[in-house]
Length: 140
Ligand SMILES: [Ca+2]
Ligand SMILES: [Ca+2]
Image (cartoon, rainbow, N blue to C red; front, side, top):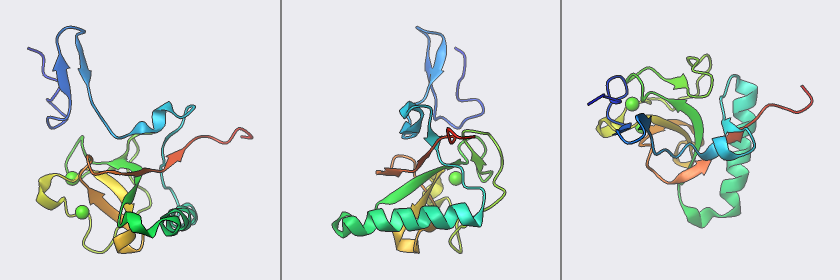
């Protein structure tokens, strides 16, 4: 049997019927008219997104500490975070102090976490959350 899991830590499932590898993911942005989970490349962009997430959060405080997924992950190589859309390494980060900690060895996604004042936390990818999607400006 071919192994889709060879480089990707048991996240992909082999499907011999279609001879492919499949991943069920929370990265839902691809379906939004060419969008993708946001790649944060500057403090300016990060501050904007933190403010947006804070506004959204304050609209419904009863939702608790639900986070806001951004497009980074280390699911390919543990500890090596990249932007999933461009496959580029992080050139800017806003990790909360002590993060990423890969808590319980299961945290391969990144979110803006209300509990950390919207600084970055690595989180288990199956955790419910909002998605921060991005797509190219039509004016570019
Ligand atoms: Ca990890
Ligand atoms: Ca963490």
